[in-house]
Amino acid sequence: MRRFILSRILQAILVMLAVSVIVFFLGRLSGDPTDILLPHDASEESHERLRDHLGLDEPLHVQYWIFLTDTLQGDFGESVKSQRPVMELVKEKWPATLELTGAAIFISLLIALPVGVYSAVRRGGFFDFLARLLAVFGQSIPSFWLGIMLIYIFAVPQFGWAIFPTHGRGEDGLWDHIHHLILPAFTMGWYLSAGIMRLTRSSMLEVLDSDYVKLARIKGVPEYKVIWKHGFKNAALPVLTYSVMIFALVLGGTVITEMVFAWPGMGRMVVDAVYARDFPVVQTTVLLLSAVFVFANLLVDILYSYLNPKIRIAR
Amino acid sequence: MFRIGINKLALIRKFPVNPGIPLLIVLLCIVMAIFAPYIAPESPTKQSLPNQFQEPGYVDKDGTKHYLGTDKFGRDNLSRIIYGARISLVVAVLTIIIAAFIGTLLGLVAGYYGGWVDSLLMRITDVGLALPLILVALVLAVVYGAELIADLIPINVVLVIGLLLWPRFARQIRGETLAIKEQDYIALARVAGCSPMRIMIKHIFPNVIPTLLVLCTLNVGYVILLEASLSFLGVGVPPETPTWGLMVSDGKGVIATYWWISLFPGLAIMFLVLSLNFFGDWVRDKLDPKLRQV
Image: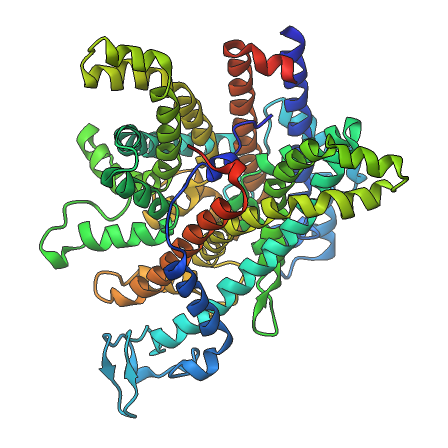
């Protein structure tokens, strides 16, 4: 067991090291960074001075080593545009993205769990058909377009009801927060709910086919209790782990939704940074998102090996 | 690592559906893309100031009917959508070819040789999966700029998506290879003196083709969404290019008054991706009973 966990942790570290190499080169793709940092008419002398200041005269591997050790010490450099430490910017924007992602997952669970469970119970029936149709739709609608259409329908006054704000994040009080959250969270959650629904359905089908569910039915346990207590409770584990993974994954996927709804989070920050070629900000964001993903995977792996010894032996 | 990969989840779906209608829509898009100059009522880049922001059904002074209206430069929406199918399909086909080629190659090698080769290749795959795809694609597309080869192939978008997508293929092909490798006929081929290369190409590859086809059809829709998202963000293609993502983005700011600019290209994306997903499900059910879920 300990060996399994250790080897997983080692793998995760190796993956993160490789990611850091890629991220390092991502920042150097565009050639000489001083071309971007300095005004067009800057003299060769000031280029030279800035290069010296940024340590660009060193050989690449030395530069990488400095980048790596700085990063490991929590020093992610300074934003080129705003001259502020990147970590400070991230700390400022992080909560908004977390809020949006959390709300999106919440909404997707709200849609996906009941639909998934009942489509498994009514397997092959009309409801099941509708539910699976819904799932294919969920994965086929471009979320940027869905967002714009939701704005058109619910936030623009041409139909006489503009019940939601078109953009931004709520500032005064809980209700204002929720009010601003609903459309963007639904836009993201809609796409996510398809995967969760499918998993819930297949996981439920497996459980409903088991002996203890049959026994419960024979004993005359009421159907709702069979479904939720005997069935769902046992089918929920893979669904919940998947939701955790999705959480890590979609943190990167908020970019589009944040752009559509002018949501002041990491996604918008990073897109602005990409356009401005503010590479320290871009690098840090990519690095952090990858780290969250790798960490979530590690967690799920370890959790699973505790719960299911077969996995340990098979590997 | 990454045991509950996204691929596996994408495969947990089954839809007993007649592939006729989806296939028809896909074919329609292909025909639209190939014969765009003959079908489109107007050039997709023809600007005309008096025709700005006209509603669907508007007939201009020359007697041309704009069935889906015009945008802020007076360009015909329908023509742009017809031409837009080109970029979407070209990007989809080329990226899938790149990703499938690299993924199959590495998957076969990793699965066949096992040991440290396998470990190394799978860790590389893990790295590919860990990178936030859309973000990296965005950075690369911005850095390398928008370049269209022959007015048709946004080469940087193709390369970027292709190079980021192969891990999805490699992982699955490796798994297949691992299983096939244990079969008796592979052992026999080895005894008969076949080189590893020959075994991989002649004996293992034909057996992973069904899985490969399923992976291709299931990922095509995803690629189209990805390409549309990138062009929505304004990267990868020059700003006047007719692409669906860019058109939706053009209409975003004026959605309150000129709804048709965003609505129709978005519908085009949705119908194409929807059809591809239905068709992909059908292909999977036909070709690969193993992947079928209850």
